[in-house]
Image (cartoon, rainbow, N blue to C red; front, side):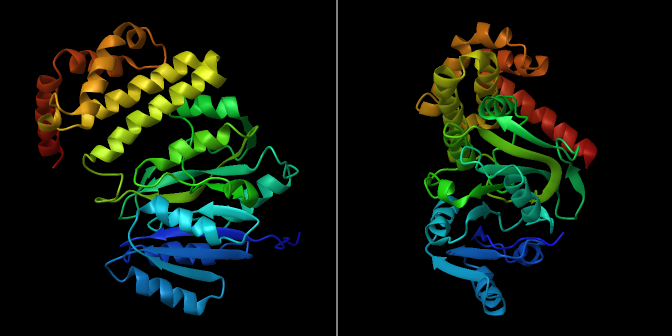
Length: 338
């Protein structure tokens, strides 16, 4: 059957110092079986050759629009892309990742064959993780090939159990709906917050259980290495935001949300360096207080694993000592594996 390409898809790609990976990303977009694309490359003040590469791509493909701006972060670049996007649908990609060639066709079909309902403006696919050598690190969480409709309650529950996908890179959104929102700037982990905001205004999300988006896990990536206070504070803030939504919209998901609430605090405590565990660190003091105060809640939570509860016990009782012991164990493991 001949594909209908009358409706345009705008694909927004923030670009910042990714000269090593950009070509694969752009070629992956250009090779899409859904051909009516507007490819918006937002150079976010790159200091390598990425900006020049964007201009070269623009000269060779009329579908590509290039914007150069001062560095403001991924959210700022995405928001700039939304401002100029002209497509009936909008998608987002990270410049160091790449899509399978059928990804946007599959997403478009998921929305169209189900009536393109006003209350159902989002479709998503699954993803895979690769390292820089091309080795598969993690395959799709689900790969049945089924197209499901997840109600907003079901989607919220999956997110609280870390079984859902909050990334915008795996999604296609109807343009009129997407333009009503903007990403929070000057913060990390911004996808999660915006996904929850969108969920509150729709019936749910079409979810295709097939992997069509490829995530590169690389050393030095913005959110994938080391301790970044802004990132882990955003992790805590997101759990507070989710808890507020649960109380208002989904009181029946209290235990799932409490699991998420304390898991995010555990994640923070596991990553914060000992030298930052000080009384004048407002976020650290807040997290530690909440973990200690909620001991009964997280110990009785059926969705937290036993090892997670044991870590919470150790970190709530002797946070600095637990961190030092954990650091020694990790170094021993690294030496053995090395």
